[in-house]
Amino acid sequence: MINRILGSIYGRMRSAYYKNRYLYFRYHYNIKTNFGFNGTDIRLYGDGEIIIGKDSYIGTNSTIQLTKGFKVCIGDNCQISHNVRIYTSSANPDQDFTKPKTKPHKTGDVIIGNGVWIGANVFINPKISIGDNAIIGANSIVTKDVPANAIVGGVPAKLIRYKNY
Image (cartoon, rainbow, N blue to C red; front, side):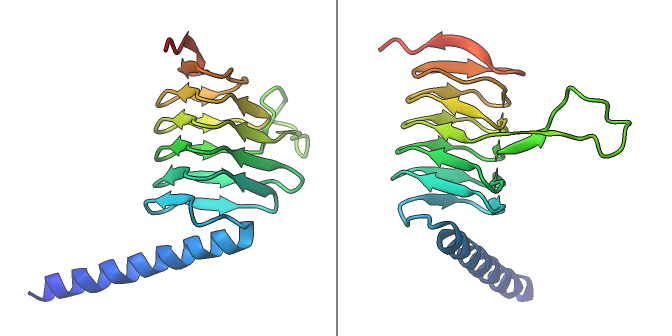
């Protein structure tokens, strides 16, 4: 009986915590109420800008990094699954990491078109544009722009085929 009561209290406190956290994100980044935070442990951070269309959502344990001077744009009707990472800044891999303080970064906006579906466990690098109605398969790393109506997947993400409708 006591476990059930404690579980209920814990659940309500956790729910209140995430509700307040997502209210902060909405206020701080000017996110409209028609954008869905679907789950827990969703993180937005940085001094950059985020622009979100209507009726889109992001899933549990996802992160959007917003580097100052750069932005993430998410179109209308986008479905971003759980454990997705979207970055506007990342270390440039083509360097000697053994030398101190020589760690240049690649930076750039991330533009996600309308009607995009991003599967679970996807990483989207800085300076990427994803065209309207594209699909990014689960467990993919997006290192190059994705054209409209494309289905891509893999590490790195490659074109599988175009939608045929």
